Image (cartoon, rainbow, N blue to C red):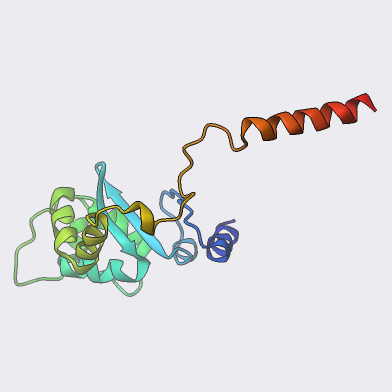
Length: 156
């Protein structure tokens, strides 16, 4: 199912948002981007390939034998976080979701995302029909023609 969604997203060039709780390694490898949340805050939002370097920047290393999908929920947990700390010369203090958010904003992926988000919106650069402001997809005249054609078929 996820493979089908991935192919569809790549084929039509659109975004598909999927929420998964503890996905398998094979499933998580199918995604291009990850949005990781903890305590209602976005801790990481970016390419799947950059998630390991981000947590290494924060002081946590994913062991080679462990998949990223298993590592992410555990590194955010207070009871499991200590096993991934790799700065042995510094004592570990629990890194809360707020600290991860601050670290993400300093990380190159977070800075790039913030730059994109703070770009002023210009209507001329975006597709004309990106968001529809009409209630109906057809105008009144087109709706009348369709209803008339349907009634004509029913009368035959």
